[in-house]
Image: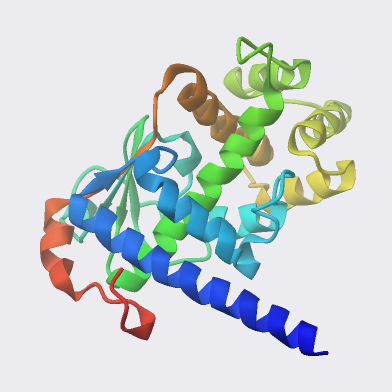
Length: 261
């Protein structure tokens, strides 16, 4: 019993320390103005998240893909963010008055704007708590993307497994697939993710859209594709904070427990 209490205290202390490190890392990155999430500058954030292991991110610290966490995050970030190498956090800076169409996630009222094929802007209107949410969601997403890359790269990174090539062909050519062909894709994607056929099928249904029934395949492909580019070609994804956002939030980015982020 005493040993159980000690383990509980140790876990609580680890979590508290991880939260503190998250806040400190975020404050440093925000002050810096930009960082590369899967590079050296994002390492402290990644390690803190993996140590903290928030319940909403499930098995993020394990080798297999975390599907429930993926659904949670994808529903709270702008549509198409998995395709973007560059993500910029901005204040409300007038993008809604431009030709850019606001992209509002289904489970979170925040505006995203697809600037071009490689860049997504996200408006921050609720201060440091929203920055915390967005950065932890993105960190989770990028960690998961590298799990995919690690699964599909073979021959010292010079080739990919057969299942990945089939997925790539379907996504890049925007193929309309039959029910039987979709089952084949479930089998291939399940193998890539290290999950069961049924689990893959369920998540596909969760992310299905009326005009885009196979969105799940696209999400998995683009996450993996950008992670492969990071590993093979050093094309790192980058997160930046606009000067206006940094000016408006300034020194008022304080987290819980009185710790700055």
